[in-house]
Length: 106
Image 1 (cartoon, rainbow, N blue to C red):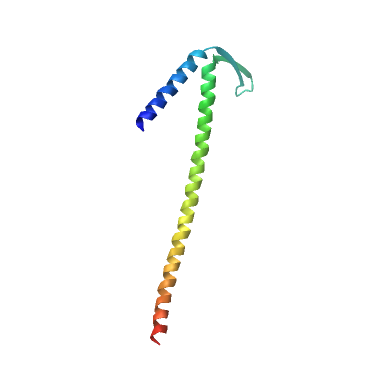
Image 2 (image 1 turned 120 degrees about the vertical axis):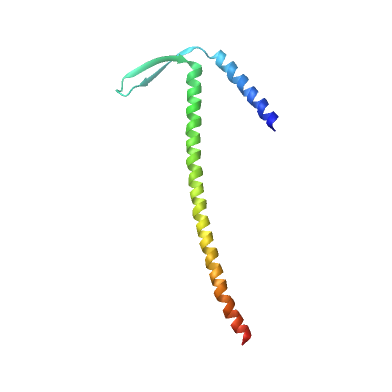
């Protein structure tokens, strides 16, 4: 299995390298600064694409992280409920056993 990961990593690195070489052209990116003034910056197309990709990965990771935390909290809550119900069942069984033995003795 590690050999497959290495092959995939090398292929991915090769594709990214080819992509980087072919997209070195400068593009103009416009955005607003904190004073709401329009700012134009010329950056390589590769940087724009990789920054967008990185931001997308970051947002997906953050969303997945919070979903995982919410799921863990739900599991913890359900486990507490299960534990309390198991304790209640054990108490009821311990109370019912003496009553059953008394009835059987009569």
